[in-house]
Amino acid sequence: RASAYFGTLYGLAERLIGDGDAYVDSQTAEEMRAGRGSLTEPGTDGPYRGRSPEESLRIFREMRAGNHPEGSHVLRAKIDMSSPNLNLRDPTLYRIKFENHPHTGDEWCIYPMYDFAHAVSDATEGITHSCCTLEFEDHRPLYDWVVARATAGGAAECPQGPPRQMEFSRLNLKHTVLSKRKLIQLVEGGHVTGWDDPRMPTLSGVRRRGMTPDALRLFCSRVGISKTDSNIDYALLEDCARETMDKSAGRAFAVIDPLRVTVTNWEGGLETFQIPRHPKEESRGLRDVPFGESLYIERADFFDAAGPEGEPSGGRPPKGYKRLLEGGQVRLKFAYVLSCDEVVRDDEGKPVELRCTYDPATRAGVTPEGQKRVKGIVHWVEASTATKCAVRDYDRLFSAEEPGAATGDFLDDINAASNKVATGVMEPSVAEDVRATLDEVAEGKSHHGSLHYQFERSGYYALDSDSTTDDVVFNRVVTLRDTWGAPRDGGAAAGKPRGRGASKQPQGKQKSAGGPPVEDVRRIALRAGTILSAEPHPEADSLLVCSVECGDGPAEDGLPPPGPRTVGAGL
Image 1: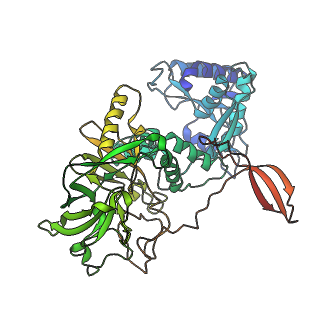
Image 2: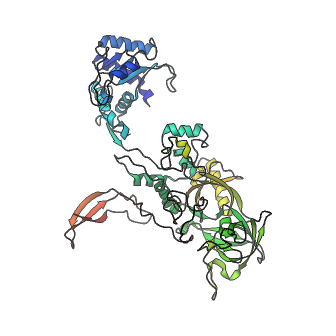
Image 3: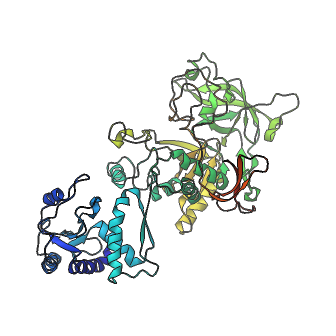
């Protein structure tokens, strides 16, 4: 921090005055602004630019002693008032400010300006490369000017050479604001719960949401560094989260909007199914999932053809619908085929319970000979052993790609549906893992977000820091697929949420609701690489065969490290 070098900065300022490289200016702010000129007109020398070093040093020391009021004097570098770069037209180095500093208290009443403190601090600390965003590109000549004088007089030692300033484009994410000023507005205005709100683009926010370090590293690798301003699609960050969490997240059953199912022909107590914790990693072992007479399934997995849900279509289910209907069948994943015989309704006619029968011959995915295979598969949770949990379905904080672009106020584009809270139920193995994780958190060995799952058919979820052994809270990190991408049908607009929980759009000519997602051909992945070698193609005179290093990252477990890619290129 610059406050650690206030003494060094002040000493250098006195030396600049003595060398004729700085002077005390006593003009008002308006007079200095007028004399600075513009982008098309050079600046003009002020009446104090010729002030002697002795007089400037005397006044500067009086400023340090607190003998002059704020705004009466400033220390300016003496560079070139006619420079085409406005930052070199005698920039201010010090100003009077009677403020209590959080680190130095009331020790100082004059404070260095950023451009001066930045360069001197870098040189003092032996920084070799100072990385800034593109808006500081015009400040680089001033940075070099200050560094040259800081190192020339021995105020800073740079054994590896003077520091260099390098600029790159800042990270801009669609549907997000990264400005500290705007983030403060969100927090102080109560639009979010705090700096660690899982929708905030802060380290504490993404950590609490459950975003893994691997996902952030992969995102940074894919975004890369450039000199061109760009607006990165938020979907890229979500894709990185899905890719990494698909490998690290265990699988579990959790019903977020429960509908009770009673298996009327079930006899006896509970049956236990042993199900893999991860379908691709046998080393993680199995988990015990009980099955019994009373179950929960997702409300969305039952189409109430005879109720209000079926009225618009005359009781006809959506085309391609494969889940449960009254009088229909569905397979419970890893368990049995279920047939719905009766629907129990409340006073408003809404279904509150399904009374069903199961087929014992269909256990664990078996289809008896002569029977038609049931295509619909849904997840479930046994009711008597289930644990309630709060589920926070987080989404993008802003509904517009560029918040505020349309109205000028970014707060107008806050997504009102960015946090949907539901009370769901989860299988017993999740509750056991939660208790173990909370014990590790209490001992300082872990953090809440380290426990994350793929809740099957719902999304990736992580344990929230509000969780206790009695009140479990899970945050949605990301959905299983991009719900903001290309439309799946002719009526939904691109860029609007799709999938479970999305608002309904006017219907045009539609494809099957159960069909595969349509790939958005407008989205492509670009990768910058280094050509290591290029040779003529053995069978085509107009082609080259190039060996290209694309920075594909470390090797996965058990696999050799990725080498250069072989790419064909046209001349």
